[in-house]
Image 1 (cartoon, rainbow, N blue to C red):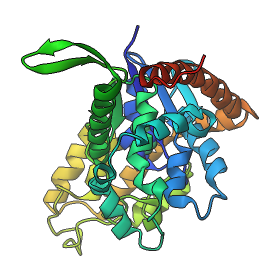
Image 2: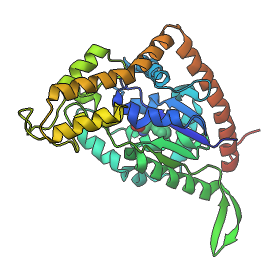
Image 3: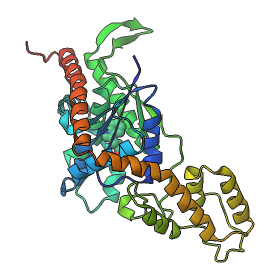
Image 4: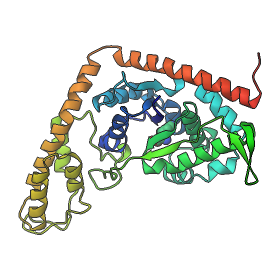
Length: 343
Ligand code: TRP
């Protein structure tokens, strides 16, 4: 049996290149070696987007079309919708009985996000409970590994602490070693599988984000990509093509490194850029061509997926059924361990 991997993505809008290099490529590569469960975290989206839910379901379907476009294979991995597996809510509730509120208040993203998203009222139970719901998501499937970006490490750390506390309460005592009680776990402690690729900046060199309008979407057509690349931030000191430029940390070259498979071309552009012997237009035109070359096969797979009406929906409903079978089993085990089973 292959080890289990679980990861989720919130359906908050279109997916962009950041999702591709930060998550989807990683997810795709794991499909051989692991039994992968990938899901649409719609309840997690609600924790911050509860005031406007109009786009949520459409985003869910659209995002999964991009997953398939990026190379995820619904035959090999299980795709599902979090809210179609209501066992997640039950596990979250039972975990909430043993988790002290300060553990959640201490999670760094909690304070940060509340300060950053001032336009939203995030003083809700749902938002405080975000990492606890995430814990339920992964513990439900006995996931050993959770592919995530480094921003998610504190959430996984909390998950491990929650699972340990739960196991200490309800795991079978298997003996004492060096004065410490050994418990047989009910739930598995998950470990992050970190994405190795460095984070891609947005077109303006800020963090890539839909809300900044600085992203290239996976569903952008070739002309949209070209236009966006042409207005990309680059070395601001280079007001003329004959001024030597800086390659390191320059978003245009970070994108070349990420997407241009022609390494000789990239090296040549870098050398000439450093020497002040190439214009921005050439560097960017070549980047747009490389990007479109990388996106073309994805566009095609996306079109094929969307040309089959109801296909993605069927995948998600079937996958949710399969996920639910696992979830039902886990909840029986959890209720038994907690001695709240009625027969
Ligand atoms: N918090 C994750 C993110 O923003 C999304 C998520 C929800 C998730 N549940 C999960 C990721 C479980 C991994 C496992 O990226």
